[in-house]
Image 1 (cartoon, rainbow, N blue to C red):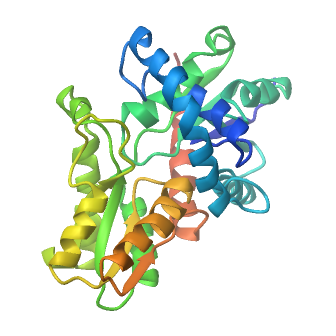
Image 2 (image 1 turned 120 degrees about the horizontal axis):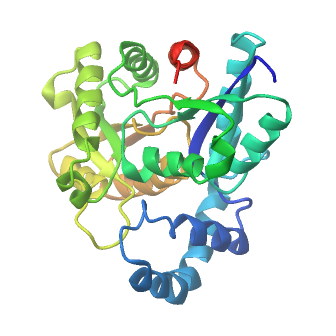
Length: 324
């Protein structure tokens, strides 16, 4: 057996191509995840297969084509950059790889490849700063589903890091370097259904703590920034204020210059580049807004890598000292 430790960066995933066929495959798997859609299968699957998969893939494919990169999906491309940068930083006895809950490379494929190299010590790193069952637990389900494969490996996972000083500093530096003078800053987080909060999810509290800490670091006043939630799906009540309605309200209040930072995303993806950078921007300008600025995610910024490197080394140290 190798004495190396494998660190697997985990995210939700991406379609293989910006095509209707690829989106149908991706959405079928993604929207069949009970962590994502908390409805009984007997009720949800007929809706998914009979309605959603007939209409949504073509629409989603058009959205992906707007932001698709020469090397592929932005989420995969930017995660690969993080992976490569961490491998350069970390010692030779640490191997950083990636795995997606939906799509490729899958958790099963990545673990099998690394085990074939003799590695039996794994750190799984869900790239979500704030904890939610729809993200963190869904990613970990991909690990638990390995079942028998887990019996002969020693593993742990990196906990949410929404309030770490180095994470807050990384975002504060990113915002500081990309802000537009005089613009109102919207700190946007991915929404989740309110019923998840009612069941005990700490997600909303953690989002607000992240925003408050960044605002304090940047010495922002209450009127300088606000919080909203994006990417609502379905008809349930989700965390509010909804981003689109919130931006409309800001325009009505006289805000004409807007910066948006998407604080629940580790790397840029469809939800940042297209949903915010194109759709929300066009909506804001159509309402009378004059300047719109989407701040990039942390991606492979040096400050973010500093945070991730420390998280990884701390987790490996804990795993090695664990005598279970």
